[in-house]
Length: 343
Image (cartoon, rainbow, N blue to C red):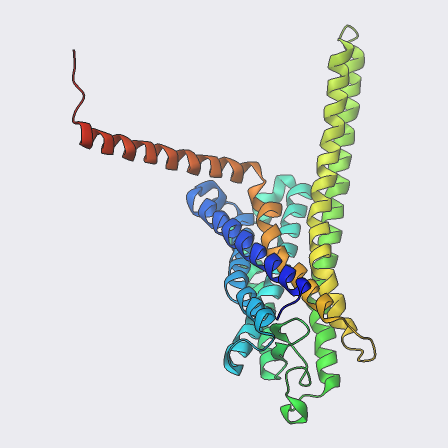
């Protein structure tokens, strides 16, 4: 019998699965519908991130939900090991894809005139090749070392010590080896991605503020010359400059903030877990895992659907569907009533 907290966790996970699946599939539809999105190099990074989110949503999230409900390992050992491999691979790949998107934005802002020569489709594919090689290497190593299995603290098939999934001393991997692998894994995935995101986006923010400041100076000089301009017009111009600076800050804060809020609790919990003397509440383990999963539901809005190009594409798709529906209704009405008569 599940308690109230577990029911709330299950409800939250169902909501994450629904939002993540619908929003990421919508990003796929926009990518296939709009050729301009496909031509851009960042579209490949977004496509890879969306692929990871969809795979995580349809594979690992439902198994975790089953683990919470049944309080037991979902399926057999082979299924759990495959799910653990996917969990490690997809989480690593998605983090590195976010880092790749931040590098792309940094190149676009810092080197605007040379962006198209520095970030071509070939360059984007090379970056994606590294993210896949990096992700496959760690997930394959974890599987070969028997470091993936069912972890009761997270009700998930994920990285787990031999003791956590019943491997015991016969698994061939000691606790020290598991601890070393865990630290190395999170240092090369979470920490690396976090450093890249912070450095690149803060550089972007610095350049954006510099350009806004130059625009502000030019605007003020222009307003001083136009001495007969109405005060309300001058105030609106200055207010628009302030909003431009705030939008740049809000975007950067969203990119870095969602990454930190969603992944930091889970990674910190995995590191604290290496100290057996420190107790971890089972509910907190589930919550930290849910926060990591929630990033898959946030990414489509943070990186795609709230951008003008994607919003316009969604509007075009909706208008096309409405026109097709109206045309079908007209055809059915025409078939029922016959052709219209003329006076």
